[in-house]
Length: 135
Image 1 (cartoon, helix red, strand yellow):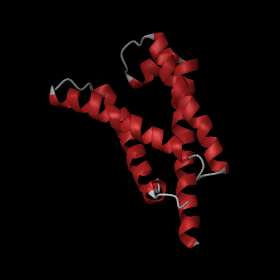
Image 2 (cartoon, helix red, strand yellow):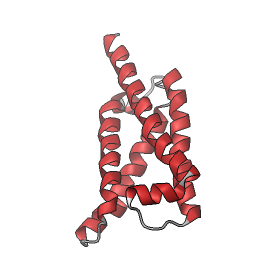
Image 3 (cartoon, helix red, strand yellow):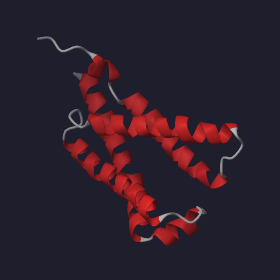
Image 4 (tube, helix red, strand yellow):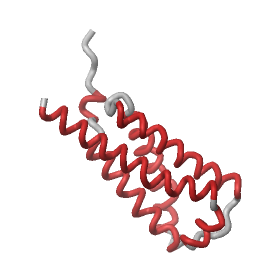
């Protein structure tokens, strides 16, 4: 019983974290793209792709609100967040680091994404998710 309560608290903390940072970055990207570009030292962005990024961040934040109501039911939000960030690290960050082409303006992104990966790995109850349901 205590483990279930602790898991619920950890999940809610992760949902809150999934609400706070993405809503700030997402809305900033959508509403004030020029400010975000200059504030974080990013290069000029394609408005369509940049807008998609902001929209995805806001969507994660809004869906995470549902996770606060029913933490176990909305674990797939955390799983999707974990997988796309890990794929980004493997497919984008590591190749740029290996070739020595990683831009320093991306460092904040890497740090923030790494905190989400660690948080998701610690929080998501993989053993429960992988457990076979009894008929």
